[in-house]
Structure formats: C-alpha cells, structure tokens
Length: 365
Image 1 (cartoon, one colour):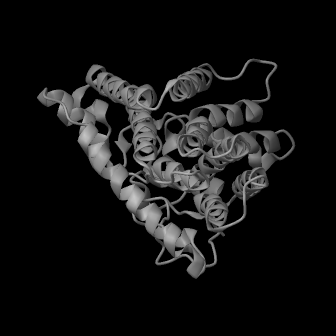
Image 2 (cartoon, helix red, strand yellow; image 1 turned 180 degrees about the vertical axis):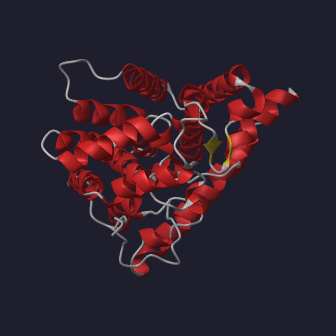
C-alpha cells in the first residue's frame, strides 16, 4: 500500500493553504474572521507589490525576471510574514508588505540559481529558466531579483539588511554543503537535515522574523518565530521528499521520483541506506535505485532503464517503510515548531501558525 501524507480534518476541496487567497484552512471559529480578512488583504497587497517591483526597461531583463513570478507559486513565505505581523502593533503595514515582498523575491532568486546547479527541467510546471535562455541569463535573472530584494530590505533599516545578509549567507552555505556532500566523519542524515535547515528553514525563519520585527512585536516573539520558521522549513522539505515519490504530475508539475532521477538522495533513500546494512531486500532496492534510477537521463540510451522499470522502482520505495518514517520525521519537526510557539500569546494568530505548520506537511503538492 502506498504511503500518503496525512490529511488535516477539514481539508477544503484538496486546496493547499499556502497559496494566495487559499487561507481558509488556517482559521477555525468566528473569532478568526478579522484575521482571515487581514491576511487575505495583506497577500493581495504583496502580490501587487511583487508585480510592481519586478519591472525592467530592458526587455530580456523584464521577461526573465518575471518568468517564475508569473508561473505562480505558493507564496508561503509572504503569508508567514503577514501572519507574524499580527503579533505587533502595526500588522499588515506598508513595512510588512515591503518585507513580505522582499522575502519572496529572495526566494524566487534562489530558484533560478538552484535550477541551474541542479540542471532541473521543470519549475512550477514550466520549463526551467536556464532551458529557455541558457545558464548565464538564468543566473543573471536571479541576481537581478536578489538586487531588488536588497533594495527593499534597505528601506526597512539596518537590522533588516543584516538579517537578509545572514540568511543569504546560509542559503549559499547550504547549497555549497549540498554540492560537496558530507565529510567522511559526518552522519549523512545529519548533514542532509542541516542542508535543509540552511536552504529552506533559514528563509522561512526570516519570513516570520521580518513580520514580527517590522510590526514591532516583542523580542520574545521574534525569537520564538525564528525557531518556529526554521523547524517548519525542515518539515516542509521532508514532506517534499515524500511528495516527490507520488504519481501526481498534474499537481507537482514533475515526474514521480524527480529527485531520484537527478541523483539526489533524499531522506527516504538515506534511511534505506541505513536499513540496507542489515536487510537484504533494502540493500537490493538501494542498489537498483543507484544503478537504474539515479542519473538516468545521463545514461546511454541503449542501456538506460525503461520508464516502466523506473516507475516500478520508485513505487517500491514509496511503499517501503522508510517513506512512512520520513512522514513521521516531518511530523516530528512540526511538533517541534509548535513547541517553539509557547512564548507567543494565545489567540487566532497563534492558532493559525499551528494549523499552518500542520498543513505544510499535509499538503499534496
């Protein structure tokens, strides 16, 4: 039986809550109506700001910089920024919208660079930018967005600029660590989770921090949201490891096992490697993943595995207990994220953060 991510009790028509306007699942009860309206209004303002900011007189700059913005996306990070601002004195202010837009531009910029380094073919259901315009233009488009995000952060003061610089450094270090792999004396799973914390957790953490900081929230709340965001980010990526194995290209925009095909060993494979030391069936599956699936597009056509064989191997991994263990680990990080919110005042905004964390793992795309 295939392992699926657990669903929240009140999923509404299988709609993800981490998309603009899709906030219903974050709220429960009439006391949340005002918060829902604030969040939806804030996200609409962020979307307008993003489209206003990503405009360039040069045609190629304009087209390439807008490419992934126009492709859509979850807007998870701006949502967190607007939501975190509810703990301050000026929720949803112009400064909050600026911070939310700047965080999303940073995220978009990193996607251009990631896709070049990973040689990815698809992003958000469209061809990766480097396949459209080449590596150099894709990298430069990412640089443009990093530059524009820096301009926005500069409007928010020195603390914001310093936080952005710290996060940018972690994004780069995470990518470097992923590229070089773990040292011989470092546990591969610990290294992998550390990469997730740097590449994803750091920016989600920053998104929450910026919302609290620019709205004037207490420092205890800023610190709590920093921990919360990083843990949610790790949970998000571990959930992605499971989603990557699912046969749902219409939802994900990718083939099942995209990471495996590219030779990326995600948590299910790393857990399988541990089990392979004492279990022959796990050892056999691991060998077939590495020899028949990993880097399949680089293999000679005459010796390349058929799509039927590849899909079968991916299905075996999906049905192996290591995939359920990955789901469990993602849920564990959600629990840790919610625990980080203990210093935060109870109310609709805190409830929404707790539901947000659960929904990040429960999403199906």
